[in-house]
Each structure stands twice: as C-alpha cells, then as structure tokens.
Length: 263
Image (cartoon, rainbow, N blue to C red; front, side):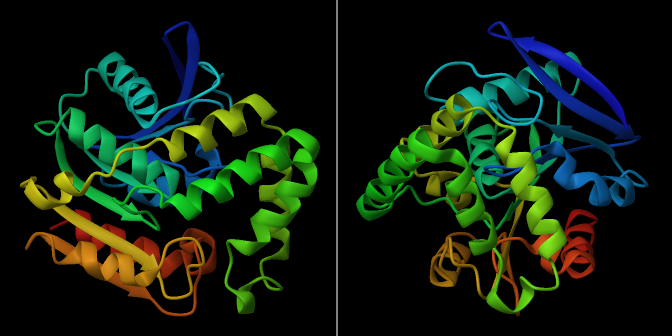
C-alpha cells in the first residue's frame, strides 16, 4: 500500500491507497489507526481502490485542536477524497469510524453508494455515557497507560481474549503512542456528536449494520431498532464476538462485507 498525505487546516492527514476500480473508504475506530485494515485492504483491493485514513489525533495524523468533532473528521476524509479526485465511494466505518462515515453521508449524500456500520451506531451518546466519557478523560489525564491497558481487553468477548492476547497487546502498544490531546479530543468529539438517524432513515443507498452478539460497547437492541428505519438496511449479528469483529471473526466479517458491497 502506498502512503500518502494531504493537508487539512494545517494538519497532515495520512492515508494508504491500494488497488483499483471503484473507491472504498475504510475508517478505523477510537484508539486505532489505519493499519487495523491491512488484512481486509489486501483482500478488498482485488475489487476496489481501497483508501484507509488515519483520523485526526490517531495513527500518523496530527491533532486539529482539543475537540475533534465528527464534522472535523469527515471534512478531513473529504480532503483526502478530493485530493484523489474521488466523486463517489462506498464506506466502511468501525466504531468511531462509523460515526465519521455517518457524518460523511450527512454531508455528501450524493457521493456515497453504500455504507457499512461495523460495530457502530447512529444514536448519540446517552447522558450516562457522556458522564462515563468525562470520567475517562480524567483518567487519561492522570494515567493514559492504565486506561489503555484496561479498555482494550474489554472490547473483546470474554471467551476470545486468551486466544487474541497478542492482538490485544499490539493494540495497546499502538494506542499508547497516541498523544493525550489526540485521545481526549476524540472522546470529546464522540460526546458531542449528533444522532444521524436521518441518514439511515432517508438515504437511498444500501446500508449494512454488522455487529457482535456480545458487543459490550453498543447494545444489540440498538442495532435491531436501527435496522427497521429503512427497507434498505441489512442487519448481520455475528455470534460469539464482541466489539472487534475484524480480529474476533475476521474471515466471517470480511465475507459479509464483501458480499454486501458486491450487490
């Protein structure tokens, strides 16, 4: 994959580019970076031009400020697409990347052909969730290392942690490399994000909600409610996995995504 960058509001936004054909944008989640997609990008590049973006404050992309709104992230991704001359695309967003994908669809509805929310939701944070995030911000300020070592394993289903211990340690090491500012700016951005039920309810393009049966971050019940907002929404619940389907059931989740995008 070729490494590229584009400047957005004075910040270098770094991304990878591989393959050929219709454009597929892959957006990572919170405490992740574009490398999470390496295995998927190789397979998807057989059919698409795959663009993997490091979102603001994560990976090699710098911080824009002390709050990275979903609009900020989406504009940064838009800057990448404009630099590549992309007018229409499909998008897959994992967790926070799904929030950014929804914002992209809200901003550029005529440019998106298909949307996959991979362990993500169109609902805004509840008040309880916002209070939890405030506590997390204080913990990051005091000791980022403890926070990262605690939160990363919790994203996996209990029965999968032992087998994926190496992956968990690698993810923790990556997250430790992010600045406190970047982590906090993205937490605040998620706290302040708008609900995007309108995107699911009214947009004409096909949508897939790909979720884990044991996801501890986003309830399966939320996915079931979202799935009935529009007849062009598919819901796939994968048994036995938590919030990290690309690692807990990589082949199955990839197959579901490929089959959906090919329709």
